[in-house]
Length: 101
Image (cartoon, rainbow, N blue to C red; front, side, top):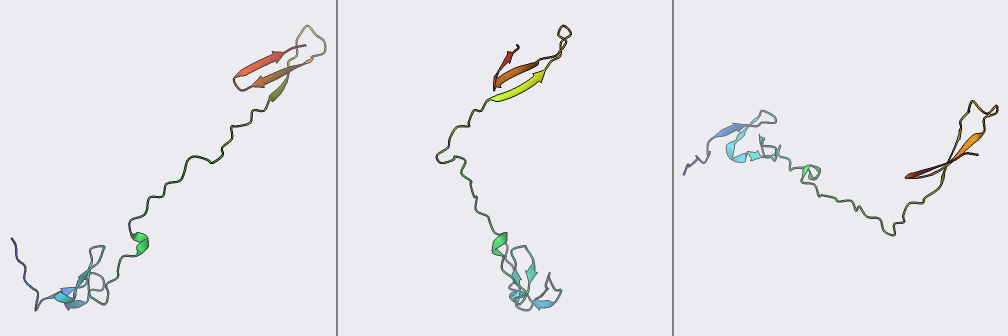
């Protein structure tokens, strides 16, 4: 097992300001910087681990979509008739009904 010196007479340079401090008075910050006691700052709470917020996906008292009729009027001119008459189309989702008169 490796042993390290106590640093009783050692000095170190601060990573933030470049000033010289006693090695025993240095502190390591959350981002890995070795700084003096007067320069040390705790980690800000907003940088901490975030809670996982899960949004609910279901709706309370949900109702089905309303089905409304879709009316599309199309005028198709024909060669046989002198005056074109409009063609009425009544449609629903999934089916198309064409009515000609």
